[in-house]
Amino acid sequence: MRYKANDHHPHLSAAVLQATAEAGANIALTKYWGNANDDLRIPANESISITLDRTRTVTTVAFHPDLTEDEVVVDEVRLSGPARERVVQHLNLLRERAGVSWRARVVSRNNFPASAGIASSASGFAALTLAGAAALGLDLSPCDLSRLARRGSGSAARSIFGGFVLLHTGARDEEAFAEPLHPPDWWEICDLVAIVSRTEKGVSSGEGHRLAPTSALHRARVARVAELNQRILDALARRDFAALGEAAEEDALLMHAVMMTSRPSLLYWLPETVMLMHRVHAWRREGVPAYFTIDAGPNVHILTLPEYADHLRTDLLALPGVQEVILCRPGPEARVIPNPE
Ligand code: DP6
Image (cartoon, rainbow, N blue to C red):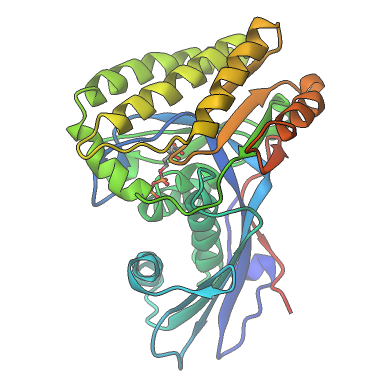
């Protein structure tokens, strides 16, 4: 499978190179937290995720010969400063590959709150990479796309693929890419995303990755996560939900322990976050298969099996402080879609 602009009918004229792509966010079962190489965004440890079906980003990239600078609009807001610069850097990587110097207009839409513990940078940079590569007619394999997406956002490397995905680390750029482990229909795990805050997080993941090595716990976590990855690979192969949930919950707690003990300390939890963690433990004591995981934000992802999802969703919505619950299942790989009118 290779992506070429002409295969997907982007509007190609002498004056515009344009394509649109869609990518799903993903929830990490074991987390990417901390880099082996900050400049290249090579993760300190391997991570395993589920690409989600309901939380998506759609991005159109249009390169024009007469634009004087890159324009980036996300959810109707025109970006400036470091947020825009990060996209410009990524476009530069694509332009270098294609030998094109045209500036681009990027229009991106998320159907979920950005920067609140649902990795919008993952779906965002996966969609940007794919749309940009398709617009420029770059002939890239999914592995190449994953490596490129990683340069924009580490977790975006995983959102190139659908279903259950492993992100490799390595000593060099070539070694750090994601690969699909199982397709979306391998196992219908549900992720109930309980939104307790829509406020943009104070400290970005990028800054957090740089702080990880200042925690005395970072090295211990990196060693432990290798074992947890093995357990999750086995649990996925055997469809053993308790084994998968236990390992995922442990790594979420390890990552937050690293965050909290970084200097300066990063504390992403709100009282509602902790309340939900207690709730999940109470459900388990009652025999309900439910495990939590939390990204760099206060919102809680509750992993469960399909027969429990509707009931848990209703219970979650009745809890004080829970604003919304998004029920996600394993979703498809990133793909090029027709350009909007
Ligand atoms: C907590 O991929 O958002 O969600 O590379 O700076 O964009 P950047 O970081 P990002 O980090 C993800 C952090 C996480 C864990 C995970 O998804 O693995």
